[in-house]
Length: 355
Image 1: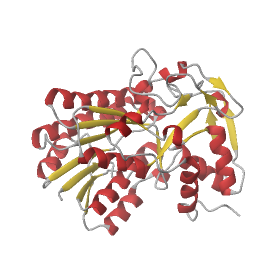
Image 2: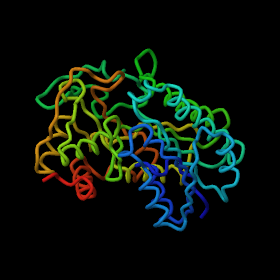
Image 3: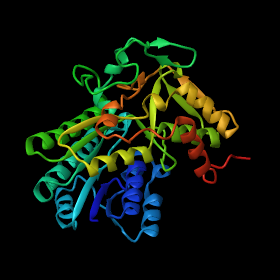
Image 4: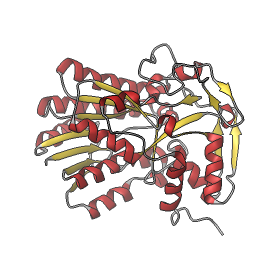
């Protein structure tokens, strides 16, 4: 059936994409250099995930390559036999880390994306290019929504136009993004431009919180995974800002990759979608803590900090209706509680509760 290139193939979404496309009948070339360990420490390393994929699938070829390596990227795309899709999930994913090293953040997120796009234009211009963008391209504009406060969460009034979720008509201008948000916005716009200007089949999926049992959650990224790990191990957890009432939608990695597959099979040029759990799968920090404690059977050692992360959202729920309309049959299939129960079950041995 051909070959799929997956960048960030050891990460949460990348590894899910590898499994999906191989089990669908494709060969997969995975680009992964484990920069997550550099970003967040050895505990966040993707090396074990990569090794499991190598051991499990003869159809998987791992290439230790930095996407900032223009010549290396060009070579991989040029030599890939019968290329069926490029799935770009590699990224520096943290607000806070980006501020500590802006050149690396922008190099990975923006320049790396440009390298992939130009290689695709040169060697495979008709191949679907699937980019995992982020809702952080909207900066902190969601924080100016007229939110109301309940006992456990912030919420939009039911009569608000975006109560069912925020759509892509929200402006990305004149707001605070964080340097991470800027680097991802630059990549997002470049993906769109290659679609519009050159007529290539491209899509930006502006993800909310993407999660699943393979997530190597760390303090600076991967909130549900890291929250459950801290609950299970007794590690202290800090909630930053908003009294713990900030809301996120959460989408399981399987549902993310199911969206990738729908687009690959029927691509468009310069498509853009908000992609998240929507109204079917969302939670506040306080609500997530309560769920983790119920599932793990032990309290979380956590503290509330008044300091919110720069550019972070008070409330985000994605309106996924545009993608559902363009790709009938796709829907959110896994809710927050089921996600947390799966994270708990899969990681029970590694995150053993101390005696």
